[in-house]
Amino acid sequence: MCAVRMHEDEVDIDVSLVGRLIAGRFPRWAGLPLRRLESSGTENAMFRLGADKVVRLPRHPRAVEGITHELRWLPRLAPGLPAAAPEPLGRGEPGEDFPWPWAVYSWLDGRNPVPGMLEEPRLLAEDLGTYVTALRRIDAAKGPIGYRGVPLAARDRFMREALAQLAGRIDTAAVTDLWEQALRAPEYAGPPVWAHGDLMAGNLLVSSGRLTAVIDYGTVGVGDPAVDLI
Image (cartoon, rainbow, N blue to C red; front, side, top):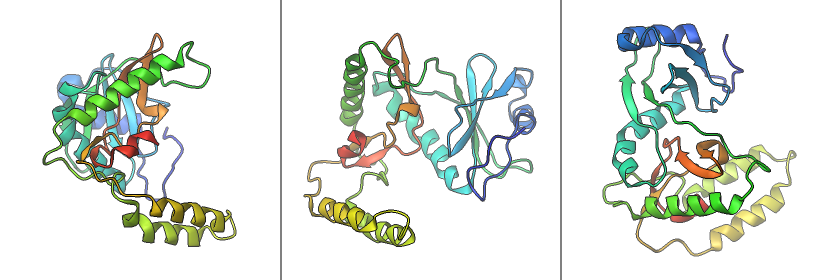
């Protein structure tokens, strides 16, 4: 049974399909237990494979780039990070059953932090700061430009088009005023650095109150470091 569809152009992905893909591409793993994860994100469907693997498949065409991007850059970044990152174990290619690349990664234990869960939230904040600092110190030469780390002016037309579509649904005048204030802020003038690009709670894993892993590197890139402070 498929999960709730989130996109008009989303493809159906279920355990039966993923089982066929695994059997065809990685027959050595074909007999392992397979189940869909409730925590699957908006961009990718995730299935736990056995005890130590997870399968990620793009749910719609726009999510494909995130998978291929992650597979390219994650092995370069992971050795320099203080928190664990998923290890790519295998790449599935487009085929008759599924039209896009997909991947198998190592499974990482931990829970997503939620309000009230941590006795000492400060410790997680310190761990996250250590992670961001380490990521910024990795050589950014030849790194990809992160689409969330570009100057705000590069997003101005998109923002105004979106506001026009939201007229009558939100206070677009107030949002436009805030947006124009942000546009007047000085642009980042320092050297480009790496940024994860999506440091939301759903991409953090904690154990015993400490950060143990950061996942989902589909938006990682080089640019303004402020993107990881949102």
